[in-house]
Length: 100
Image (cartoon, rainbow, N blue to C red; front, side):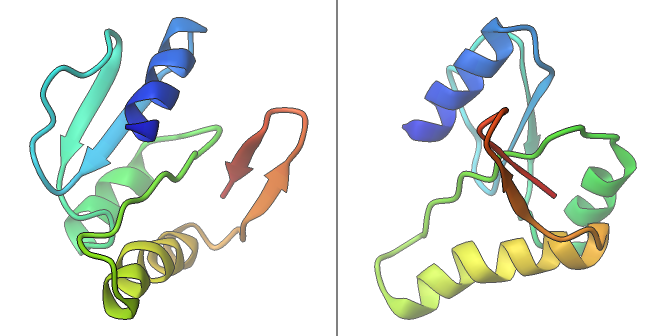
């Protein structure tokens, strides 16, 4: 999947990479830390906000393919992260990454 491929490339380039998912992930690329949980839950938002990330690449997948699932998977997660970090979101062309 795209998240694993991106994580592999980033880890191989020397970046610290943390993956977050609601379900267990097996066969993670070497060098990728894994945190299991819902990215918009208070517990995970607290854990994420305690870590000093330089860059956040947010790669999300809906649990199903309808409007409600897309809203929960994309809009609700990004809204929760932005509210926690309160810095906004923009695309940084040099690094080709979303900065939050």
